[in-house]
Length: 80
Length: 253
Image (cartoon, rainbow over all chains, first blue to last red; front, side, top):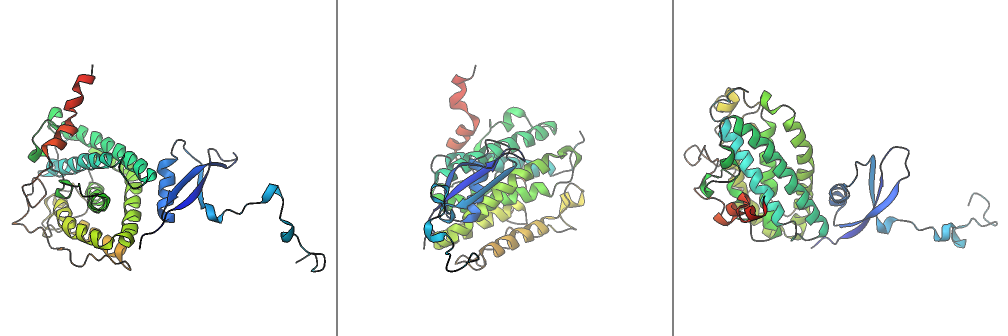
């Protein structure tokens, strides 16, 4: 059974203290291959930090705000 | 620069020639791999291998090898590359199943060297090989799921040739001449054991098994110590022509 490719989003930082930036995407069938692809595909800089995450695991925050359903309810108390 | 012990030049020559052909095979796949990321990885790996060859050829020239000969001006049967790389044309699984164990074997042979001429070169090559070998293992794991039967077949065909490249099973700490001479710090038997154990572990739990591989080859009778192989084969004349760059001479001023 063939392992399907997944999209991974790539983040990197050049120097410690810089912002971590989104530098691109790649496709890979396993996490191990994805990490190696990131090293060879995005080797244009001597990165201080390089990371990847599956695109499906990115949690989008819509317009920079939480969805109304994610806000705590007054009836449940502030700790809900 | 001191003369190396008997057999050491042939040992390093075989590693250099294997890396040269490995680089060429990697380059052949740089536009034909299953994904863009694999293509980029193949091109990067090819570049690394050619850099390693350049460094090793410098040392070989200091030991008396002709630079013109080292650059590729020789017959196919004068290339002492691992036989596993002679013909790698059947597809991605064949390429990975041949190149991956060969690259690992070449690294083991280099890593075993302990001679002042090599300085920090082997450490630097090791930094590159860390990525090569990690990628190869990751791809072998994937292929063990995608194409277990094809990979099994390729490994049973290829691994005996790679074992011949490493050296014969009789070369232990008492009989390995380069270990006895102090040129290497591990006898061939130790390298073979590490190599076998690595692939047994890698494929443990997958549908691919290396149990059926003939792990005893080569014997003393079947081993060509000069070319580090069991047969009289070679890369093709067409590949040698590519390696020599003869067709591109008109573009060089």
